[in-house]
Image (cartoon, rainbow, N blue to C red; front, side):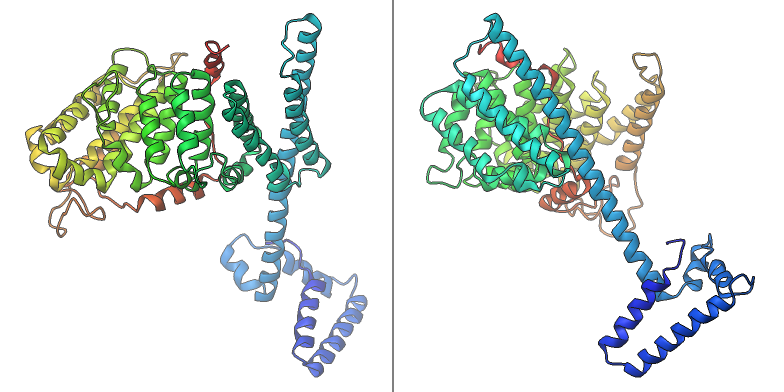
Length: 520
């Protein structure tokens, strides 16, 4: 609510309304009254009871909102709210412009430093000049883009920031480099696209992803369909640097639902290939992290779950294993040796997405059978007491909650599910809070309370007299009490997630530079 009445603005609104509807007599009367008020205002100036004093009294905004509603006219409220919204929108726009200008200035400064470094290397004879022209072209494109932002004071739209011409130039370079077998050229184009994704202002990242899809950077909507990308993924199995640059860009694209739908345009071969790549990577490695990130993001779309349930052969599992088994094996290894937290965290989040799916529920009951479900449940219950990070522990508890349903009642009884959870809660309650590097246990206490609250919410018994407790109906509760489900379709979930998150966050790791050592 504004703290000053805008009488002129309100009068203009009233006069405009009267004129629009041809209420001439009323309009004349209004003009006369307005002129009379003007004379009265001059006559009463300086008087404590004059019109100005009345206005000041009216302008005292009451602290109580209900009082405010009754004191101010409805027309004034509408007028003031509209002005307030305009001011708020203008502030948001200015903040975005400021962010764009600052980011552009930083990137121009960074490019300048890189150019100086290149010049020093050339001067000292420490740099190959074969691709110097291409490097200069890349700098020229980036400087042109950031110069546009600065010239327009941050008002550039997405078309100016990442135009179709620029995108098409990258795409043509990628196709040409692949046709020529120029792996270094392929890597440079992929990295350039990924670097642009990381450097662009956060609020514009979603638009960048949509531009990558619209320009069909991987040619998935052409006659070749998945062939172009599948061939690159196959080559990537033998080239860690290409694997890294390709997976990093794929992870950017599947950060939105449209990106996931783009990758599965022609089916699920690309996801299958990423799974095979994943199983070739060392635990905790950069490429393993990107593989897991991609799979975790696509797993939120229900149609993709069938791929994760297929048993695929690998060096570690010649007889074949599905992703349920692979993730459980990874967590088991993680309890015995140090594995990057990202791999464990995102892998168990992937596991939770898979087990949450109706497709998986049907698969465990009708295809895999009770013995397979029992093996999964037994491993999950055992892992609760292993040495694992708190975030991973919470994901495992969520996985267990999805298996506490009517259709898994017999398996739960065989594994003593409820008793195991109760024993875990008692055991975890007695554990001391984990201290941080500085010896402070405050964060550890918070984590501990979070885990116990999660258990209380998901596994405590409820009154079974509240109707039919059909565990397979996700709007009800699981049999015998426990978590009350209020689920929605997976596609709705990812849309809601995108709306809540707003700006996208793309994965970026400090140790990525190691991926190029073997290649160089």
